[in-house]
Length: 441
Image (cartoon, rainbow, N blue to C red; front, top):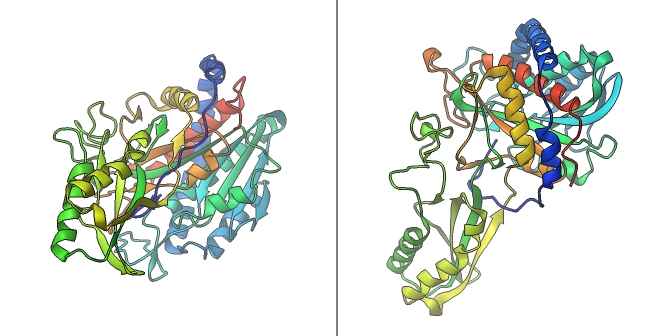
Protein backbone atom coordinates (compact mmCIF):
# COMPACT_ATOMS: atom_id res chain seq x y z
CA UNK A 1 0.00 0.00 0.00
CA UNK A 2 1.44 3.31 -1.03
CA UNK A 3 1.00 6.51 0.95
CA UNK A 4 -0.23 8.94 -1.67
CA UNK A 5 0.90 12.39 -0.69
CA UNK A 6 0.80 13.39 -4.29
CA UNK A 7 -1.30 11.21 -6.53
CA UNK A 8 -4.59 9.69 -7.43
CA UNK A 9 -7.05 9.37 -10.01
CA UNK A 10 -8.32 7.94 -13.14
CA UNK A 11 -11.55 6.17 -13.97
CA UNK A 12 -11.12 2.52 -14.76
CA UNK A 13 -12.98 1.37 -17.89
CA UNK A 14 -16.63 0.31 -17.67
CA UNK A 15 -17.42 -2.70 -15.54
CA UNK A 16 -19.17 -5.82 -16.68
CA UNK A 17 -22.72 -6.26 -17.85
CA UNK A 18 -25.45 -7.49 -15.54
CA UNK A 19 -25.49 -10.81 -17.35
CA UNK A 20 -22.14 -11.57 -15.75
CA UNK A 21 -23.50 -10.70 -12.33
CA UNK A 22 -26.35 -13.08 -12.98
CA UNK A 23 -23.93 -15.92 -13.58
CA UNK A 24 -22.13 -15.13 -10.35
CA UNK A 25 -25.32 -14.89 -8.34
CA UNK A 26 -26.28 -18.34 -9.53
CA UNK A 27 -23.16 -19.94 -8.10
CA UNK A 28 -24.18 -21.99 -5.08
CA UNK A 29 -21.96 -23.00 -2.17
CA UNK A 30 -23.20 -26.07 -0.42
CA UNK A 31 -21.73 -29.12 1.32
CA UNK A 32 -19.03 -29.65 -1.29
CA UNK A 33 -17.56 -26.20 -0.60
CA UNK A 34 -17.66 -26.79 3.15
CA UNK A 35 -15.70 -30.01 2.69
CA UNK A 36 -13.20 -28.11 0.54
CA UNK A 37 -12.80 -25.33 3.09
CA UNK A 38 -12.26 -27.89 5.88
CA UNK A 39 -9.49 -29.47 3.81
CA UNK A 40 -7.93 -26.06 3.24
CA UNK A 41 -8.09 -25.34 6.96
CA UNK A 42 -6.17 -28.53 7.78
CA UNK A 43 -3.55 -27.81 5.12
CA UNK A 44 -3.19 -24.19 6.25
CA UNK A 45 -2.60 -25.23 9.84
CA UNK A 46 0.02 -27.72 8.67
CA UNK A 47 2.11 -25.07 6.88
CA UNK A 48 1.46 -22.16 9.24
CA UNK A 49 4.66 -22.37 11.31
CA UNK A 50 6.74 -22.57 8.15
CA UNK A 51 5.02 -19.46 6.80
CA UNK A 52 5.67 -17.55 10.00
CA UNK A 53 9.37 -18.43 9.79
CA UNK A 54 9.40 -17.29 6.16
CA UNK A 55 7.71 -14.02 7.03
CA UNK A 56 10.24 -13.33 9.76
CA UNK A 57 13.13 -14.05 7.41
CA UNK A 58 11.69 -11.63 4.87
CA UNK A 59 11.10 -9.07 7.61
CA UNK A 60 14.72 -9.26 8.73
CA UNK A 61 16.00 -8.83 5.17
CA UNK A 62 13.82 -6.11 3.63
CA UNK A 63 14.72 -4.52 0.31
CA UNK A 64 13.52 -1.18 -1.00
CA UNK A 65 11.69 -0.73 -4.30
CA UNK A 66 13.87 -1.66 -7.23
CA UNK A 67 16.34 -3.56 -5.04
CA UNK A 68 14.35 -6.70 -4.23
CA UNK A 69 17.13 -9.16 -5.22
CA UNK A 70 17.20 -11.50 -2.22
CA UNK A 71 13.45 -11.26 -1.73
CA UNK A 72 12.72 -12.25 -5.33
CA UNK A 73 15.20 -15.13 -5.17
CA UNK A 74 13.57 -16.42 -1.97
CA UNK A 75 10.09 -16.29 -3.51
CA UNK A 76 11.19 -17.91 -6.76
CA UNK A 77 12.92 -20.74 -4.91
CA UNK A 78 9.80 -21.44 -2.86
CA UNK A 79 7.60 -21.52 -5.95
CA UNK A 80 9.97 -23.87 -7.77
CA UNK A 81 10.07 -26.16 -4.76
CA UNK A 82 6.27 -26.40 -5.01
CA UNK A 83 6.55 -27.43 -8.65
CA UNK A 84 5.24 -24.22 -10.18
CA UNK A 85 6.44 -22.77 -13.45
CA UNK A 86 8.44 -19.66 -12.58
CA UNK A 87 9.11 -16.60 -14.70
CA UNK A 88 11.45 -13.89 -13.44
CA UNK A 89 12.62 -10.48 -14.52
CA UNK A 90 9.81 -9.41 -16.83
CA UNK A 91 10.19 -6.07 -15.06
CA UNK A 92 12.77 -5.44 -12.37
CA UNK A 93 12.83 -8.29 -9.89
CA UNK A 94 9.33 -9.54 -10.63
CA UNK A 95 8.45 -13.18 -10.05
CA UNK A 96 5.47 -14.98 -11.59
CA UNK A 97 4.52 -18.49 -10.51
CA UNK A 98 2.07 -20.55 -12.56
CA UNK A 99 0.21 -23.45 -10.98
CA UNK A 100 -1.53 -25.56 -13.62
CA UNK A 101 -4.21 -27.84 -12.25
CA UNK A 102 -4.80 -31.39 -13.36
CA UNK A 103 -8.24 -30.52 -14.70
CA UNK A 104 -9.18 -27.95 -17.34
CA UNK A 105 -10.77 -24.75 -16.12
CA UNK A 106 -10.47 -21.05 -15.66
CA UNK A 107 -7.49 -18.91 -14.64
CA UNK A 108 -7.29 -16.87 -11.44
CA UNK A 109 -4.44 -14.47 -10.58
CA UNK A 110 -3.21 -13.49 -7.12
CA UNK A 111 -0.95 -10.47 -6.50
CA UNK A 112 1.65 -9.86 -3.75
CA UNK A 113 4.39 -7.21 -3.40
CA UNK A 114 8.13 -7.71 -2.90
CA UNK A 115 9.36 -4.32 -1.73
CA UNK A 116 9.79 -2.75 1.69
CA UNK A 117 9.87 0.87 2.84
CA UNK A 118 12.94 3.04 2.83
CA UNK A 119 13.18 5.13 6.01
CA UNK A 120 14.00 5.04 9.67
CA UNK A 121 11.31 3.05 11.47
CA UNK A 122 11.60 1.83 15.03
CA UNK A 123 10.60 -1.70 14.02
CA UNK A 124 9.88 -3.03 17.53
CA UNK A 125 9.69 -6.69 16.46
CA UNK A 126 12.19 -9.11 18.01
CA UNK A 127 13.07 -10.14 14.43
CA UNK A 128 13.67 -6.52 13.39
CA UNK A 129 15.24 -5.47 10.13
CA UNK A 130 18.92 -6.17 9.68
CA UNK A 131 19.12 -3.70 6.80
CA UNK A 132 19.54 -0.16 8.15
CA UNK A 133 17.11 2.32 6.65
CA UNK A 134 14.80 -0.31 5.15
CA UNK A 135 11.83 -1.89 6.91
CA UNK A 136 8.70 -3.90 6.19
CA UNK A 137 6.52 -1.23 7.79
CA UNK A 138 3.68 -1.76 5.33
CA UNK A 139 3.18 -5.52 5.63
CA UNK A 140 4.42 -6.78 2.29
CA UNK A 141 6.34 -9.54 4.10
CA UNK A 142 2.97 -10.78 5.39
CA UNK A 143 1.48 -10.56 1.90
CA UNK A 144 4.27 -12.71 0.46
CA UNK A 145 3.82 -15.29 3.20
CA UNK A 146 0.08 -15.45 2.51
CA UNK A 147 0.59 -15.78 -1.25
CA UNK A 148 3.18 -18.55 -0.84
CA UNK A 149 0.89 -20.27 1.66
CA UNK A 150 -1.98 -20.18 -0.83
CA UNK A 151 0.36 -21.60 -3.48
CA UNK A 152 1.40 -24.45 -1.20
CA UNK A 153 -2.14 -25.33 -0.18
CA UNK A 154 -3.35 -25.33 -3.78
CA UNK A 155 -0.28 -27.14 -5.12
CA UNK A 156 -1.09 -30.00 -2.75
CA UNK A 157 -4.39 -30.35 -4.64
CA UNK A 158 -2.86 -30.01 -8.10
CA UNK A 159 -4.26 -33.26 -9.48
CA UNK A 160 -7.86 -32.29 -8.76
CA UNK A 161 -7.42 -28.54 -9.29
CA UNK A 162 -9.63 -27.14 -12.02
CA UNK A 163 -7.80 -24.54 -14.06
CA UNK A 164 -4.72 -22.40 -13.43
CA UNK A 165 -3.60 -20.04 -10.68
CA UNK A 166 -1.08 -17.30 -11.49
CA UNK A 167 0.86 -15.78 -8.59
CA UNK A 168 2.29 -12.34 -9.41
CA UNK A 169 4.96 -11.03 -7.05
CA UNK A 170 5.50 -7.48 -8.21
CA UNK A 171 8.39 -5.16 -7.41
CA UNK A 172 8.15 -1.45 -6.67
CA UNK A 173 4.65 -1.08 -5.29
CA UNK A 174 5.73 1.63 -2.87
CA UNK A 175 6.81 3.81 -5.80
CA UNK A 176 3.63 2.98 -7.74
CA UNK A 177 5.66 1.71 -10.68
CA UNK A 178 5.73 -2.07 -10.54
CA UNK A 179 2.20 -3.03 -11.50
CA UNK A 180 2.00 -0.60 -14.42
CA UNK A 181 5.36 -1.74 -15.72
CA UNK A 182 4.23 -5.37 -15.63
CA UNK A 183 0.94 -4.54 -17.33
CA UNK A 184 2.77 -2.53 -20.00
CA UNK A 185 4.95 -5.60 -20.63
CA UNK A 186 1.86 -7.81 -20.92
CA UNK A 187 2.50 -9.91 -17.84
CA UNK A 188 -0.61 -11.97 -18.60
CA UNK A 189 0.18 -12.60 -22.26
CA UNK A 190 0.37 -16.38 -21.89
CA UNK A 191 -2.01 -16.95 -18.99
CA UNK A 192 -4.90 -14.55 -19.66
CA UNK A 193 -6.51 -14.68 -16.18
CA UNK A 194 -10.26 -14.31 -15.85
CA UNK A 195 -10.02 -12.60 -12.44
CA UNK A 196 -7.37 -11.18 -10.13
CA UNK A 197 -7.30 -10.80 -6.35
CA UNK A 198 -5.01 -9.23 -3.76
CA UNK A 199 -5.00 -8.05 -0.17
CA UNK A 200 -3.46 -5.57 2.20
CA UNK A 201 -2.96 -6.14 5.90
CA UNK A 202 -3.91 -3.06 7.91
CA UNK A 203 -5.06 -1.73 11.29
CA UNK A 204 -8.27 -3.75 11.61
CA UNK A 205 -8.73 -6.53 14.17
CA UNK A 206 -6.78 -9.65 13.34
CA UNK A 207 -9.06 -12.16 11.65
CA UNK A 208 -11.25 -9.54 10.03
CA UNK A 209 -11.58 -9.20 6.25
CA UNK A 210 -13.16 -6.04 4.83
CA UNK A 211 -14.09 -5.28 1.24
CA UNK A 212 -16.44 -3.12 -0.81
CA UNK A 213 -17.44 -2.79 -4.44
CA UNK A 214 -15.84 0.01 -6.46
CA UNK A 215 -13.42 2.35 -4.65
CA UNK A 216 -11.56 1.09 -1.58
CA UNK A 217 -9.66 4.38 -1.24
CA UNK A 218 -10.45 8.03 -1.80
CA UNK A 219 -9.44 9.48 -5.16
CA UNK A 220 -6.31 11.57 -4.76
CA UNK A 221 -5.06 14.52 -6.76
CA UNK A 222 -2.29 17.08 -6.57
CA UNK A 223 -3.96 20.46 -7.07
CA UNK A 224 -1.93 23.30 -8.56
CA UNK A 225 -2.65 27.02 -8.82
CA UNK A 226 -0.27 28.98 -11.02
CA UNK A 227 -0.29 32.74 -10.46
CA UNK A 228 1.56 35.81 -11.61
CA UNK A 229 4.31 36.71 -9.16
CA UNK A 230 2.62 39.85 -7.91
CA UNK A 231 0.82 38.71 -4.75
CA UNK A 232 1.99 39.45 -1.24
CA UNK A 233 2.60 36.71 1.31
CA UNK A 234 -0.57 37.75 3.12
CA UNK A 235 -2.63 37.53 -0.07
CA UNK A 236 -1.24 34.06 -0.80
CA UNK A 237 -2.02 32.84 2.69
CA UNK A 238 -5.54 34.21 2.56
CA UNK A 239 -6.16 32.72 -0.88
CA UNK A 240 -4.99 29.30 0.29
CA UNK A 241 -7.33 29.44 3.26
CA UNK A 242 -10.25 30.43 1.06
CA UNK A 243 -9.61 27.56 -1.35
CA UNK A 244 -9.39 25.09 1.52
CA UNK A 245 -12.60 26.41 3.02
CA UNK A 246 -14.42 26.17 -0.29
CA UNK A 247 -13.30 22.62 -1.10
CA UNK A 248 -13.10 20.75 2.23
CA UNK A 249 -16.16 18.64 3.02
CA UNK A 250 -17.13 16.04 5.62
CA UNK A 251 -20.33 14.75 7.09
CA UNK A 252 -21.36 16.47 10.35
CA UNK A 253 -19.05 15.41 13.16
CA UNK A 254 -16.94 13.20 10.92
CA UNK A 255 -13.14 13.37 10.98
CA UNK A 256 -12.02 11.08 8.15
CA UNK A 257 -8.39 12.18 8.46
CA UNK A 258 -8.18 10.32 11.77
CA UNK A 259 -7.11 6.91 10.46
CA UNK A 260 -6.87 5.51 13.97
CA UNK A 261 -10.68 5.39 13.87
CA UNK A 262 -11.04 2.99 10.93
CA UNK A 263 -12.18 0.34 13.40
CA UNK A 264 -14.29 2.62 15.58
CA UNK A 265 -17.49 0.96 16.80
CA UNK A 266 -19.63 3.84 15.50
CA UNK A 267 -17.62 5.58 12.76
CA UNK A 268 -15.30 2.86 11.46
CA UNK A 269 -15.16 1.55 7.90
CA UNK A 270 -17.59 -1.31 8.53
CA UNK A 271 -20.27 0.90 10.08
CA UNK A 272 -23.10 2.25 7.85
CA UNK A 273 -22.60 5.66 9.49
CA UNK A 274 -18.85 5.63 8.91
CA UNK A 275 -16.86 8.85 9.01
CA UNK A 276 -14.99 7.65 5.95
CA UNK A 277 -17.60 8.47 3.33
CA UNK A 278 -18.65 11.61 1.45
CA UNK A 279 -15.62 13.79 2.13
CA UNK A 280 -12.95 15.91 0.56
CA UNK A 281 -9.77 16.36 2.57
CA UNK A 282 -7.20 18.94 1.48
CA UNK A 283 -3.76 19.65 2.93
CA UNK A 284 -3.93 22.29 5.69
CA UNK A 285 -1.34 24.45 3.91
CA UNK A 286 -0.28 24.88 0.30
CA UNK A 287 3.29 24.23 -0.78
CA UNK A 288 4.49 27.46 -2.40
CA UNK A 289 7.39 28.05 -4.76
CA UNK A 290 8.52 30.36 -7.57
CA UNK A 291 8.91 28.79 -10.97
CA UNK A 292 9.64 30.44 -14.33
CA UNK A 293 8.50 33.81 -13.03
CA UNK A 294 5.24 32.47 -11.57
CA UNK A 295 4.01 31.69 -8.09
CA UNK A 296 2.98 28.04 -7.79
CA UNK A 297 0.70 26.76 -5.02
CA UNK A 298 0.17 23.00 -4.62
CA UNK A 299 -1.75 20.82 -2.21
CA UNK A 300 -2.95 17.22 -2.06
CA UNK A 301 -6.64 16.46 -1.90
CA UNK A 302 -8.58 13.26 -1.22
CA UNK A 303 -12.10 13.02 -2.61
CA UNK A 304 -14.53 10.11 -2.31
CA UNK A 305 -16.50 11.04 -5.42
CA UNK A 306 -14.91 10.86 -8.86
CA UNK A 307 -17.72 13.06 -10.18
CA UNK A 308 -16.99 15.78 -7.62
CA UNK A 309 -13.37 15.94 -8.76
CA UNK A 310 -14.60 17.29 -12.07
CA UNK A 311 -15.93 20.42 -10.36
CA UNK A 312 -12.80 21.31 -8.38
CA UNK A 313 -11.05 23.53 -10.95
CA UNK A 314 -14.15 25.63 -11.58
CA UNK A 315 -14.76 26.04 -7.86
CA UNK A 316 -11.19 27.18 -7.29
CA UNK A 317 -11.50 29.71 -10.11
CA UNK A 318 -14.65 31.04 -8.45
CA UNK A 319 -12.75 31.47 -5.17
CA UNK A 320 -9.96 33.35 -6.94
CA UNK A 321 -12.53 35.56 -8.67
CA UNK A 322 -14.30 36.31 -5.38
CA UNK A 323 -10.98 37.25 -3.81
CA UNK A 324 -10.43 39.86 -6.53
CA UNK A 325 -7.33 38.05 -7.83
CA UNK A 326 -8.55 36.93 -11.23
CA UNK A 327 -5.97 39.15 -12.90
CA UNK A 328 -3.17 37.10 -11.32
CA UNK A 329 -4.46 33.61 -12.12
CA UNK A 330 -2.73 31.75 -14.93
CA UNK A 331 -4.17 28.26 -14.44
CA UNK A 332 -5.77 25.71 -12.11
CA UNK A 333 -5.06 22.05 -12.74
CA UNK A 334 -4.34 18.63 -11.33
CA UNK A 335 -0.66 17.91 -11.88
CA UNK A 336 -0.43 14.37 -10.51
CA UNK A 337 -2.88 11.50 -10.46
CA UNK A 338 -2.91 7.73 -10.31
CA UNK A 339 -5.79 5.32 -10.80
CA UNK A 340 -7.46 4.07 -7.67
CA UNK A 341 -8.31 0.52 -6.66
CA UNK A 342 -11.73 -0.21 -8.15
CA UNK A 343 -13.32 -3.50 -7.16
CA UNK A 344 -15.57 -5.31 -9.60
CA UNK A 345 -19.07 -5.18 -8.02
CA UNK A 346 -20.28 -8.67 -8.97
CA UNK A 347 -16.99 -10.33 -8.01
CA UNK A 348 -16.99 -8.43 -4.73
CA UNK A 349 -20.46 -9.67 -3.87
CA UNK A 350 -19.47 -13.22 -4.74
CA UNK A 351 -16.26 -12.99 -2.70
CA UNK A 352 -18.23 -11.77 0.31
CA UNK A 353 -20.56 -14.76 0.04
CA UNK A 354 -17.71 -17.27 -0.23
CA UNK A 355 -15.60 -15.72 2.53
CA UNK A 356 -18.54 -15.35 4.90
CA UNK A 357 -19.28 -19.05 4.43
CA UNK A 358 -15.76 -19.70 5.75
CA UNK A 359 -15.27 -17.00 8.38
CA UNK A 360 -18.77 -15.82 9.21
CA UNK A 361 -20.49 -12.50 8.66
CA UNK A 362 -19.04 -11.05 11.87
CA UNK A 363 -15.46 -11.31 10.65
CA UNK A 364 -15.92 -10.90 6.89
CA UNK A 365 -17.63 -7.55 6.52
CA UNK A 366 -18.49 -5.01 3.86
CA UNK A 367 -16.87 -1.60 4.02
CA UNK A 368 -19.10 1.45 3.86
CA UNK A 369 -16.29 3.96 3.41
CA UNK A 370 -13.10 4.81 1.54
CA UNK A 371 -9.72 5.14 3.23
CA UNK A 372 -7.85 8.42 2.62
CA UNK A 373 -4.11 8.97 2.13
CA UNK A 374 -3.30 5.47 0.80
CA UNK A 375 -3.58 3.75 -2.55
CA UNK A 376 -2.22 0.64 -4.28
CA UNK A 377 -1.00 0.13 -7.83
CA UNK A 378 -3.04 -3.08 -7.90
CA UNK A 379 -5.39 -0.70 -9.73
CA UNK A 380 -3.35 -1.17 -12.90
CA UNK A 381 -3.99 -4.92 -12.89
CA UNK A 382 -7.71 -4.20 -12.45
CA UNK A 383 -7.66 -2.12 -15.61
CA UNK A 384 -6.85 -5.30 -17.54
CA UNK A 385 -8.51 -8.02 -15.46
CA UNK A 386 -11.65 -7.75 -13.30
CA UNK A 387 -10.56 -8.07 -9.71
CA UNK A 388 -11.08 -7.53 -6.01
CA UNK A 389 -8.74 -6.09 -3.36
CA UNK A 390 -9.29 -6.79 0.34
CA UNK A 391 -8.27 -5.30 3.65
CA UNK A 392 -7.15 -7.95 6.17
CA UNK A 393 -6.90 -7.12 9.85
CA UNK A 394 -3.49 -7.38 11.47
CA UNK A 395 -3.94 -5.53 14.77
CA UNK A 396 -4.24 -7.16 18.18
CA UNK A 397 -4.39 -4.59 21.01
CA UNK A 398 -4.24 -7.36 23.61
CA UNK A 399 -0.73 -8.14 22.34
CA UNK A 400 0.17 -4.49 21.80
CA UNK A 401 0.22 -4.95 18.02
CA UNK A 402 -1.12 -2.18 15.79
CA UNK A 403 -0.84 -2.72 12.02
CA UNK A 404 -1.14 0.94 10.99
CA UNK A 405 0.73 1.03 7.70
CA UNK A 406 3.81 3.25 7.46
CA UNK A 407 3.59 4.04 11.18
CA UNK A 408 6.80 3.93 13.26
CA UNK A 409 5.55 1.07 15.46
CA UNK A 410 3.84 -0.96 12.75
CA UNK A 411 3.43 -4.56 13.89
CA UNK A 412 1.26 -7.43 12.66
CA UNK A 413 -0.32 -10.34 14.48
CA UNK A 414 0.92 -13.30 12.44
CA UNK A 415 -2.42 -15.06 12.83
CA UNK A 416 -3.39 -12.84 9.90
CA UNK A 417 -1.27 -15.15 7.75
CA UNK A 418 -3.36 -18.14 8.76
CA UNK A 419 -6.56 -16.20 8.10
CA UNK A 420 -5.33 -15.03 4.72
CA UNK A 421 -4.21 -18.42 3.47
CA UNK A 422 -7.31 -20.25 4.66
CA UNK A 423 -9.76 -17.66 3.42
CA UNK A 424 -8.29 -16.88 0.03
CA UNK A 425 -7.26 -20.41 -0.91
CA UNK A 426 -10.91 -21.28 -0.34
CA UNK A 427 -12.02 -18.31 -2.43
CA UNK A 428 -9.75 -19.27 -5.33
CA UNK A 429 -10.98 -22.88 -5.24
CA UNK A 430 -14.57 -21.61 -5.33
CA UNK A 431 -13.86 -19.29 -8.23
CA UNK A 432 -12.08 -22.02 -10.20
CA UNK A 433 -15.16 -24.11 -9.73
CA UNK A 434 -17.56 -21.32 -10.68
CA UNK A 435 -19.69 -21.95 -13.78
CA UNK A 436 -18.79 -18.62 -15.41
CA UNK A 437 -16.33 -15.81 -15.00
CA UNK A 438 -16.69 -12.08 -14.96
CA UNK A 439 -14.77 -11.82 -18.19
CA UNK A 440 -11.98 -9.50 -19.22
CA UNK A 441 -12.15 -5.91 -20.32
